[in-house]
Length: 93
Image (cartoon, rainbow, N blue to C red; front, side, top):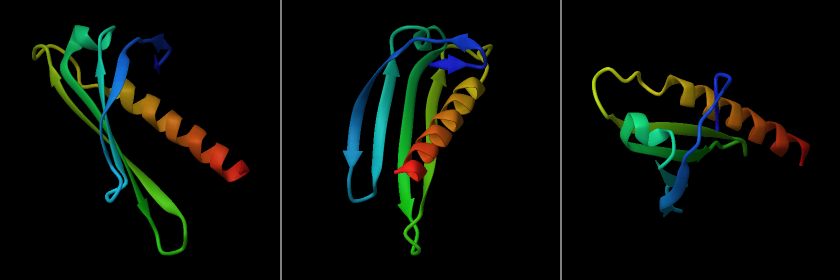
């Protein structure tokens, strides 16, 4: 995972898949993520529109190790890039 020019490492696992709500929840752990956060969840939800298109909503739930830790803004940039890459790939298909 690249964060504004910095490489960050972590493991992830799927916590839940909710097909009816088109939601997947991931837990990130180990590596660099545990240096700053006790809990780090990423929730990915797809909402279909009537015209056949859709939108993606990313939610990051986190608990900082202490109050001096910054919010995970770099991860927001990373997920924005991932979304754009997936969108470009789907448009080619």
